[in-house]
Image (cartoon, rainbow, N blue to C red):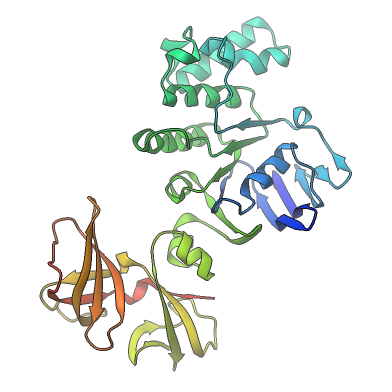
Length: 356
């Protein structure tokens, strides 16, 4: 039986619908992120799961029991869930140990069991040496670990995280996203994670639900979202891409009369013919100064028109000599090409994706 089920979940404020018929199922121990831009409905969805917001239509069930439906909502304190907010919401007048023990004491566990479970979780989150410090004496990353420990120690049925890393600097965010995944792998708590940061979603999630204008556009494993986006929005929002108008004829994808490879391999539906939208990631192309040995790849003459150094890679805009089409391509940091240089653009047809 699934752990968490959203069925036709809808929330409207007057004539404004902010969450529109969302269907989503999480298996026990699964980590799913709600990813999307500001205003797409992801936080409202999370707050409905937590019980802070009543749905206008649809239902939320945990282990087959309906917790939310119009006119019948189980209050948050009776849902067996834990939630971590952007602000961490840890008590400033309590030590680390007291913060983590707070939920256990509310459940009236014995002092011995509280001490044992707090000690175990502080060791897991590497805060046992800081047990007697107050939040003001901790770094942002350490405060986030306190919030995680407090949420996990009560063994919730579902763990909810609302953009928990948004207040951290870039290096700490990267460190904490892997910490969150490590803790998930250890405890296997069913988790819903809200973020607008695709890097966070990619690093932490088993599956990602991409939301746009209140609806889920695609739910898939991170690598499938990236390599096989099903809609224009998903293709443009998850990573960077070139969206190209092409045609399918005779089972091949044609761009300006040049074949980009098999339409079936690119994800086109059986029998697809005519105009299609194609997603071609910058990483699917190589910018070369000499023509490579002929293989299955498509090689075209081009000219470098723009370039940006990003540290981990060069971001190039190249113009194809055949039709003047401009494409964005990526290259390793040591492969520097001057603007105006004539190059060869190698396109890997295995990484071409037809967008529905």
